[in-house]
Each structure stands twice: as structure tokens, then as C-alpha cells.
Length: 205
Image (cartoon, rainbow, N blue to C red):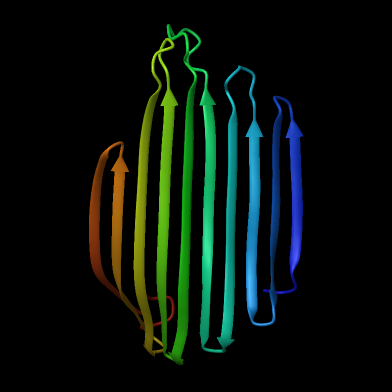
């Protein structure tokens, strides 16, 4: 909310290390937004010991009316790490490289049909990926992979029959798949949930 504003920051140091970030947020008319991007890198003292990381996040909201809002979010992170191995390893080619990525996005609709009832429908998707490579004494390269995908749908309701009682209830559905090397597995989850909060007197819940 508020007028759009931005910030930039940066750092640099020994071992070719640096870090930087850009952030912004604000609103224009019925639209609201926030976002950030950051990067970090270091070469470190030993050879083949590099580290890099990037992260992103953003959110966009639109309110067509006083009782309705829609929006979307994104969060992501990517990493790369190179390891030179133990100082005393007998491996003549100990360099290992690991790459990691994790991204999450959501879309939502939030409505308030009445003064005592609000509801929110959320759709989310996540992807996670890990890949590692290594070699022993100049032999063939070994590659390991792990990847997951996940979808989530959640529909939540908040009802206030009176000033002293609140009911939260909803339903949830998830779809997940995992691949580890050449093997794969899938999972399905369904759930109903509810909670009643009563405040019969002040300071008693």
C-alpha cells in the first residue's frame, strides 16, 4: 500500500564476494504490488569452492470492489555450490557441483459476501529441483537428480455468528509427484478442517 517506493543495496568484500538487492512496493489505483530480487556470490579461499545464490519474490493485488480482492504471488530461489572435497581425500578429481532450485507461485480470490462471512480460495504450485555431479579419480561423471512438483487448492471460510464466537472451516486438496533419479512416486491428499473460537468473557478464550 502507499506511494510506490524502491530501495537498492550492495556489498562487496574479499574472496570476490558480493551481495546486492533491489526492492519495491506500493499501490497505483486499485493495484498493489511488492517485489524483490537479491543475489549473493563468493569464490572463497580454495579453488573450486564457489557459491552463488539468487532469490526473487513478488506479489500483485487487485481490488475491483470493497468486498473482493484477487492476487498472485511468486517466490523463487536458485543456488549453485562447488565443493573441492576434503583436504586429505585420495580422490584426484574431488570437485562436486550441486545446483538447487525452489519456486512457489500462488493465485487467490478473497471475498466478503457479508459482514460476518469472508472466504478465500487459493491455488498454489511448487517445483523443487536438486542436481549433483561428481567424479572419482578421473572416472566417469556421476549425476544425481531429485525433483518434486506439488499443487494445492485450499478454500477457507471465516464466519462470525456473534461478537464472541468465530468459526474457521475449509477444504484442502493436494497433488504431489517426486522423481529420484529414474524412480517416481505420486501422492494425493484430501482434507476437511475446522476450528471454533469462543470468547465468553474478556481475557478468556
